Amino acid sequence: MSPDIQHDRHRHRFETRVDGVACVLDYQLSERVMTVIHTVVPEAVAGRGIAANLTRMAMDTARQEGWKVVPACSYAEAWMRRHPEYADLRA
Image (cartoon, rainbow, N blue to C red):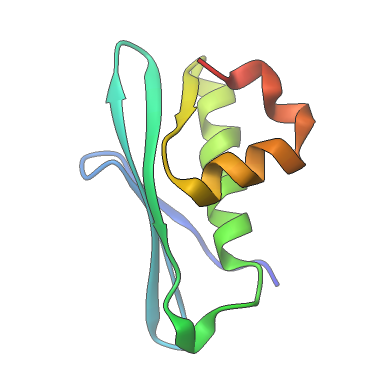
C-alpha cells in the first residue's frame, strides 16, 4: 500500500487519509534538525504500513533537505533501528 502523503511544511506535518481516516506524523524543526514528535495512525486503519510510509517520507524529506533527525517518538525510534540505511540522519 502506498498512500498519498502530503507534507504540510507550515504545520510541520506529514499526513494522509486512508478510508477517510486522518493519519499523521508531526515534527519540530530547529536549526536543520527535525525532531519527530509523534506518529498517529488510528486503530481503524492500523496494521497497513501507514506509519512506516509516513516515517519513510519524513526521513526521505530530511535527507533531501540536508536535515538531521531526532526520533523522539517511540515509533520513529524503532523504525530507524530497523532501517540502518537512515542511520546517517541521526542528530
